[in-house]
Image (tube, rainbow, N blue to C red; front, side, top):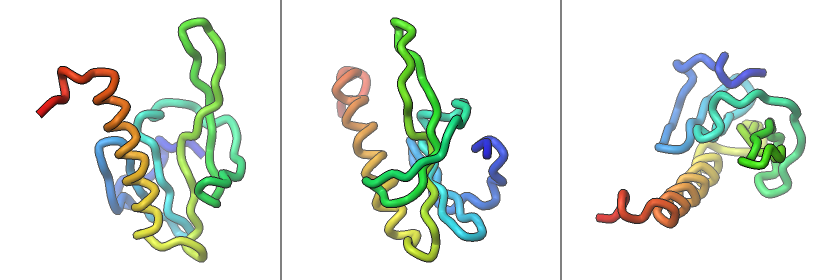
Length: 108
């Protein structure tokens, strides 16, 4: 599935770096920093205990790196609040990374 085909009316929460969609049987957590990447595989993510769609990015040397794009949290196992905890963790990680790499722009 391409994340670009998700109906925006299914959006239930969003932050600066994430979006959460409510689908029929799952909540989907989308990493907005990975928008535009093509999904190449789906596998199990032991950290979040759900399936994750992955794609590839390339560094300046042309080396390919597999990255997670979106997570599929089944409603039978996860509540929206639990998914939101994962989203907030992601948000905090990216904010910290941004502050460390661009400190002057994001200070007070």
